[in-house]
Length: 197
Image 1 (cartoon, rainbow, N blue to C red):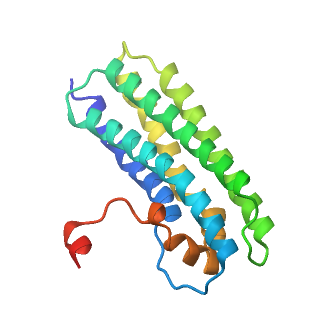
Image 2 (cartoon, one colour):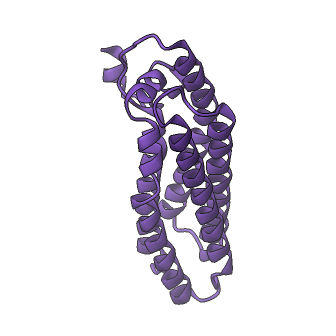
Image 3 (cartoon, one colour):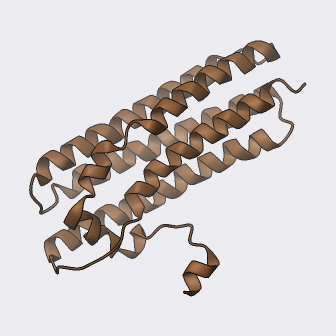
Protein backbone atom coordinates (compact mmCIF):
# COMPACT_ATOMS: atom_id res chain seq x y z
CA UNK A 1 0.00 0.00 0.00
CA UNK A 2 3.13 2.13 -0.24
CA UNK A 3 2.55 3.11 -3.88
CA UNK A 4 1.33 6.71 -3.85
CA UNK A 5 3.28 7.97 -0.87
CA UNK A 6 6.70 8.63 -2.42
CA UNK A 7 5.01 10.15 -5.46
CA UNK A 8 2.87 12.34 -3.30
CA UNK A 9 5.99 13.57 -1.53
CA UNK A 10 7.36 14.56 -4.94
CA UNK A 11 4.13 16.43 -5.54
CA UNK A 12 4.55 18.25 -2.24
CA UNK A 13 8.15 19.11 -3.06
CA UNK A 14 7.15 20.45 -6.47
CA UNK A 15 4.42 22.49 -4.85
CA UNK A 16 6.69 24.11 -2.35
CA UNK A 17 8.63 25.36 -5.36
CA UNK A 18 5.45 27.07 -6.51
CA UNK A 19 5.04 28.71 -3.14
CA UNK A 20 8.33 30.50 -3.64
CA UNK A 21 6.65 32.29 -6.48
CA UNK A 22 4.14 33.92 -4.19
CA UNK A 23 6.78 34.87 -1.71
CA UNK A 24 8.57 36.61 -4.54
CA UNK A 25 5.54 38.87 -4.47
CA UNK A 26 5.73 39.49 -0.78
CA UNK A 27 9.29 39.97 0.41
CA UNK A 28 11.78 42.63 -0.63
CA UNK A 29 14.16 44.98 1.15
CA UNK A 30 13.08 48.52 1.77
CA UNK A 31 14.56 51.93 1.11
CA UNK A 32 12.26 54.88 0.63
CA UNK A 33 12.44 57.59 -1.96
CA UNK A 34 9.05 58.97 -0.95
CA UNK A 35 6.95 58.28 -4.04
CA UNK A 36 3.44 58.52 -2.57
CA UNK A 37 1.71 57.43 -5.75
CA UNK A 38 3.85 54.30 -5.92
CA UNK A 39 3.40 53.65 -2.19
CA UNK A 40 -0.37 53.80 -2.63
CA UNK A 41 -0.16 51.40 -5.58
CA UNK A 42 2.03 49.03 -3.56
CA UNK A 43 -0.36 49.11 -0.61
CA UNK A 44 -3.34 48.28 -2.82
CA UNK A 45 -1.54 45.35 -4.46
CA UNK A 46 -0.02 44.04 -1.22
CA UNK A 47 -3.32 44.19 0.68
CA UNK A 48 -5.03 42.25 -2.11
CA UNK A 49 -2.24 39.73 -2.62
CA UNK A 50 -1.63 38.86 1.04
CA UNK A 51 -4.80 36.78 1.63
CA UNK A 52 -4.20 34.98 -1.68
CA UNK A 53 -0.63 34.14 -0.68
CA UNK A 54 -2.01 32.66 2.55
CA UNK A 55 -4.54 30.65 0.54
CA UNK A 56 -1.74 29.20 -1.59
CA UNK A 57 0.32 28.39 1.51
CA UNK A 58 -2.69 26.57 3.01
CA UNK A 59 -3.20 24.61 -0.19
CA UNK A 60 0.47 23.59 -0.15
CA UNK A 61 0.16 22.59 3.50
CA UNK A 62 -2.93 20.49 2.76
CA UNK A 63 -1.11 18.53 0.07
CA UNK A 64 1.92 18.04 2.28
CA UNK A 65 -0.25 16.86 5.18
CA UNK A 66 -2.05 14.41 2.94
CA UNK A 67 1.30 13.01 1.82
CA UNK A 68 2.54 12.41 5.34
CA UNK A 69 -0.48 10.37 6.40
CA UNK A 70 -1.21 6.95 5.01
CA UNK A 71 -3.87 8.33 2.74
CA UNK A 72 -5.88 6.41 0.21
CA UNK A 73 -5.67 7.46 -3.45
CA UNK A 74 -9.22 8.83 -3.16
CA UNK A 75 -8.24 11.05 -0.21
CA UNK A 76 -5.13 12.25 -2.00
CA UNK A 77 -7.16 12.98 -5.12
CA UNK A 78 -9.77 14.98 -3.21
CA UNK A 79 -7.17 17.01 -1.29
CA UNK A 80 -5.01 17.69 -4.34
CA UNK A 81 -7.97 18.69 -6.51
CA UNK A 82 -9.18 21.15 -3.86
CA UNK A 83 -5.66 22.53 -3.38
CA UNK A 84 -5.21 23.10 -7.12
CA UNK A 85 -8.62 24.80 -7.28
CA UNK A 86 -7.63 27.10 -4.40
CA UNK A 87 -4.33 27.93 -6.10
CA UNK A 88 -6.03 28.61 -9.40
CA UNK A 89 -8.49 30.97 -7.67
CA UNK A 90 -5.70 32.66 -5.71
CA UNK A 91 -3.56 33.37 -8.77
CA UNK A 92 -6.59 34.64 -10.67
CA UNK A 93 -7.41 36.97 -7.77
CA UNK A 94 -3.81 38.21 -7.71
CA UNK A 95 -3.99 38.91 -11.43
CA UNK A 96 -7.18 40.90 -10.90
CA UNK A 97 -5.58 42.82 -8.04
CA UNK A 98 -2.57 43.81 -10.13
CA UNK A 99 -4.83 44.73 -13.06
CA UNK A 100 -7.17 46.76 -10.86
CA UNK A 101 -4.30 48.64 -9.23
CA UNK A 102 -3.30 49.95 -12.65
CA UNK A 103 0.24 50.51 -13.85
CA UNK A 104 2.79 51.36 -11.15
CA UNK A 105 4.28 54.85 -11.41
CA UNK A 106 7.63 53.70 -12.82
CA UNK A 107 9.32 53.47 -16.19
CA UNK A 108 7.59 50.82 -18.36
CA UNK A 109 5.04 50.44 -15.56
CA UNK A 110 2.22 49.60 -17.95
CA UNK A 111 4.14 46.84 -19.73
CA UNK A 112 5.36 45.38 -16.44
CA UNK A 113 1.83 45.39 -15.05
CA UNK A 114 0.33 43.76 -18.19
CA UNK A 115 3.02 41.06 -18.23
CA UNK A 116 2.47 40.25 -14.55
CA UNK A 117 -1.32 40.01 -15.03
CA UNK A 118 -0.85 37.71 -18.04
CA UNK A 119 1.53 35.54 -16.04
CA UNK A 120 -0.77 35.28 -13.01
CA UNK A 121 -3.74 34.39 -15.21
CA UNK A 122 -1.66 31.78 -16.99
CA UNK A 123 -0.68 30.25 -13.61
CA UNK A 124 -4.33 30.21 -12.65
CA UNK A 125 -5.18 28.27 -15.84
CA UNK A 126 -2.30 25.86 -15.28
CA UNK A 127 -3.52 24.97 -11.78
CA UNK A 128 -7.09 24.60 -13.05
CA UNK A 129 -5.78 22.15 -15.64
CA UNK A 130 -3.84 20.22 -12.95
CA UNK A 131 -7.06 19.95 -10.98
CA UNK A 132 -8.75 18.33 -13.99
CA UNK A 133 -5.81 15.93 -14.37
CA UNK A 134 -5.99 14.88 -10.71
CA UNK A 135 -9.74 14.38 -10.92
CA UNK A 136 -9.31 12.17 -13.99
CA UNK A 137 -6.92 9.76 -12.24
CA UNK A 138 -8.07 6.22 -11.51
CA UNK A 139 -8.16 5.88 -7.71
CA UNK A 140 -9.08 2.17 -7.90
CA UNK A 141 -5.75 1.24 -9.40
CA UNK A 142 -2.92 2.18 -7.04
CA UNK A 143 -0.15 1.81 -9.65
CA UNK A 144 -1.98 3.81 -12.30
CA UNK A 145 -2.80 6.47 -9.74
CA UNK A 146 0.86 6.73 -8.71
CA UNK A 147 1.90 7.06 -12.35
CA UNK A 148 -0.66 9.79 -12.88
CA UNK A 149 0.60 11.65 -9.84
CA UNK A 150 4.13 11.43 -11.22
CA UNK A 151 3.02 13.24 -14.37
CA UNK A 152 1.32 15.91 -12.30
CA UNK A 153 4.45 16.34 -10.16
CA UNK A 154 6.45 16.83 -13.37
CA UNK A 155 4.00 19.51 -14.54
CA UNK A 156 4.20 21.20 -11.16
CA UNK A 157 7.96 21.24 -11.31
CA UNK A 158 7.81 23.04 -14.65
CA UNK A 159 5.27 25.46 -13.24
CA UNK A 160 7.39 26.32 -10.24
CA UNK A 161 10.45 26.90 -12.42
CA UNK A 162 8.72 29.09 -14.96
CA UNK A 163 6.06 31.63 -14.40
CA UNK A 164 7.51 34.23 -12.10
CA UNK A 165 9.69 36.25 -14.45
CA UNK A 166 7.13 38.96 -15.11
CA UNK A 167 6.37 39.20 -11.40
CA UNK A 168 10.06 39.63 -10.65
CA UNK A 169 10.29 42.29 -13.34
CA UNK A 170 7.26 44.07 -11.91
CA UNK A 171 8.94 44.14 -8.51
CA UNK A 172 12.32 45.43 -9.54
CA UNK A 173 13.66 48.71 -8.26
CA UNK A 174 11.25 51.31 -6.92
CA UNK A 175 8.21 49.03 -7.06
CA UNK A 176 9.92 46.44 -4.89
CA UNK A 177 11.00 49.10 -2.43
CA UNK A 178 7.50 50.53 -2.20
CA UNK A 179 6.07 47.03 -1.67
CA UNK A 180 8.63 46.23 0.99
CA UNK A 181 7.31 49.10 3.11
CA UNK A 182 3.78 47.68 3.20
CA UNK A 183 2.99 45.64 6.29
CA UNK A 184 0.83 43.31 4.19
CA UNK A 185 3.77 42.58 1.89
CA UNK A 186 6.17 41.54 4.61
CA UNK A 187 6.96 37.84 4.34
CA UNK A 188 4.41 35.97 6.46
CA UNK A 189 6.68 33.29 7.85
CA UNK A 190 9.18 35.19 9.96
CA UNK A 191 11.28 33.06 12.28
CA UNK A 192 11.03 34.10 15.95
CA UNK A 193 14.71 35.05 16.11
CA UNK A 194 14.35 37.32 13.10
CA UNK A 195 11.20 38.87 14.53
CA UNK A 196 12.91 39.60 17.83
CA UNK A 197 16.02 41.12 16.15
